[in-house]
Length: 156
Image 1 (spheres, rainbow, N blue to C red):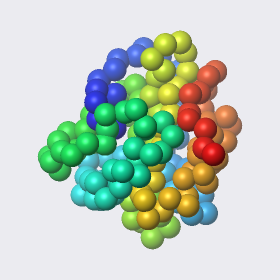
Image 2: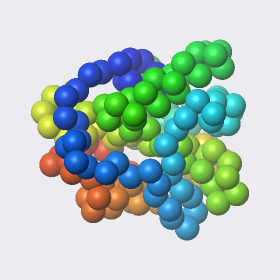
Image 3: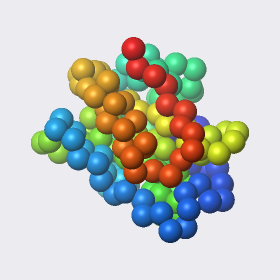
Image 4: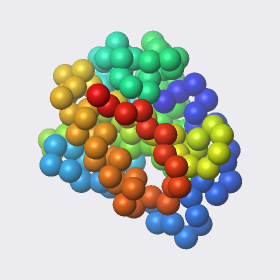
């Protein structure tokens, strides 16, 4: 998620002793931290589905996605990876069981107040997984993460 999301600096987004999950495994997908090595697959995923992503709850009024070169996407992925290492925000790539990139999940501090702002998208050709991803991530956030409040656009 471009547009400065990864440039926020929040102290203690998660407690120092919290073990940040590095994977969520579900039947139809798994989440792993988004890394610069995912650039080609990530770029292909979102550029093939920009209209679909803009129609996804939580993205309707956002400036991203927008056309940009793959090199700019790489810088965004580098920023997301740095945020993950510094515990300022957590971006996961959504992988199919076959290992193809089919979406992303972003967990960042809320603009105001404690808690997390969460957004997710899946490629247009995997739109049927949007609700499953939302449900799985919502349950994971409740069961595993230390947030007292979560803003995550509800799915119909």
